[in-house]
Every structure is written in structure tokens, then in C-alpha cells.
Image 1 (cartoon, rainbow, N blue to C red):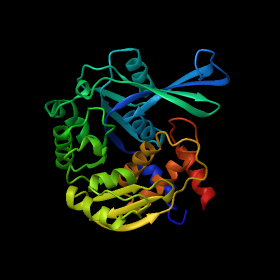
Image 2 (image 1 turned 30 degrees about the vertical axis):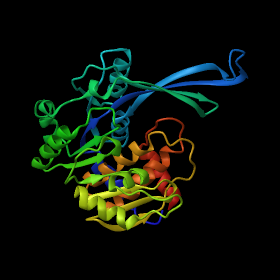
Image 3 (image 1 turned 180 degrees about the vertical axis):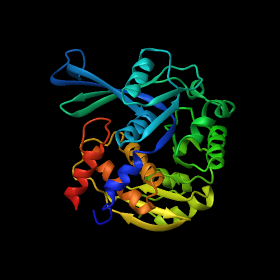
Image 4 (image 1 turned 45 degrees about the vertical axis):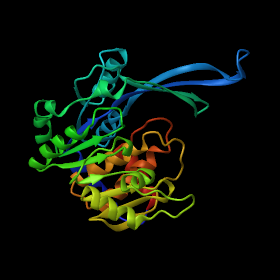
Length: 329
């Protein structure tokens, strides 16, 4: 891997002492597994013979699962409906020792159902309410989250553009975190156009970074890394920016300047579902565990490399990470 995870056991020990608060869009990821051996006589579509179903937490819930899997304690705050999906989601998180704070709202629990045929995703079915149904509102932040922020080592804002995070809530949580001296990170969705500023970390992918920077590229034009980093710092004054570049690795920036690009750690890619959540969780854990940005990025990169080798929304354990890094050394 080129650097730097010689201190991995010590870092994992520090991570095991951390507590992280995740605030954002929590979902239930449902998987229907089966096989297709014939075409329907009713329409030119495959007939799926269902073998089994499985569930896990998605979105901000998957960030929380990854934090717990790496050994830290976690609380996740977001909308969970008073419905069967909400109860299943709460139980899924509780089974992994994750506490939940159900925020106000009137919608249904967000459910993403993936139809899996021979380890391939055939289609996805989404159930959700309009964004206004999930709006939290800054007025509740002090009451529900201030104590959680004070007792946490870092706060992650996980935005899937479903409605929980808005300008007021992000501003309020960021202010509470800064007052308490806690690291605060955001995984942004540019279409939400959140007015954030002065955070410790943002983690856009390549497409999102261009949108956030207000840059439109001509087809096949090279990625303007230096310009993107400079504009992101000018617009948002974020201390660290880590841009995930897919197969090209991760771009690290600080103070608007490029620090380094590190290559991807993935050996085999079966499914990228939730890989961004893994990367974000690992990056924040490492930074909160007093790693420098480059070491944190290598740690995050390795964690994502493990997860994309699995099918479905998945997590990585310390044992898997140690084995992965040992193989790459």
C-alpha cells in the first residue's frame, strides 16, 4: 500500500476508546436474493425465484454500523418511522450496540430494496416520503443532541439528500461541536446545496467535488484537481478535504492545497454499495484517534478496499483490516 499503516494495532486500540455521533439520513437496506431461469409470459422480464431476504441499516445507519464494527461506540440520530421497517431498523442497530435517537418527522422509514440475482443487482425499489416529512429543524438540536455532542469524540453529518440535514441544523450542530472542541465531518450531497462552512472534514467523490466547486468539465477533460481544491477551500473554509476518485484512489487537500493522491487499495470489486460510508467512518475514526491525514486516508482506503470485495452493504472488522494490510505489505 506504499505507507503507512505500521501503527495499525495501536491506532485500532485508540479507536476502540472513541465515541462517535452520526446525524443524518437513516435507511433500511432490504435485499431479496434469488435466481432467474425463465422469462415471464406476461412481459419480457425475468421471473425471480426468491431464496431468502436480508436486512441491514443503510445511509447514516451504515456509517454507524461501520463505526461499531471497527470497535468504537456510536449513537445515530435521524428519522425512523413508527412502522415495521422502522422497528426492524432500530433492532438492527441495537443488535450491534448502536443507540438511536429518533428525530421528529411525519414520513415513512426510508427503505431501499435491492433484487439480487446470482450475486448481481437486478434492480432497486425505493420507498420514502417527500424531504419535508423528515425535516429535523435546528430548534431540536440543543435539546436532543447537545449532550451527545459533548460526550462524543467526533460528529459525522451523513447527508443522503432525504431531508434531515438543512442549513440551520448543520450550522447548529457544527457550532455545538466547535464549542465542545469536537471534530465535525460532512459527507455532502451537492444537490442539497447546504450552506456549511469551517468544518474539519468533507468527503465528496469526484463528481460531487466538481459540483461543490462550481466547475463544469467538457467531456473527457482532465480532472482539475488543484482548481477544485482551491475553490472548495475558498467557498467552504474546510480544514481537510478528502476526495474519493474511484479507481484512481483518494485526493488529500489541506488549506486549499493538494497534499497527496494515494492509490486505491481495492484488490477485487464486487459491490460498491455503502463503500463511501465505510470510507467516511474509517477516516473520521482515524482522525479522532489522533492519526495524521495521510495515515487516516490509508486506513480509510484499506477499509473501503475490504468492503467492496463483499456483496451488499457491508462493514469491516479490525481482524479483516489487519489481514488486508498484512497482505498488502
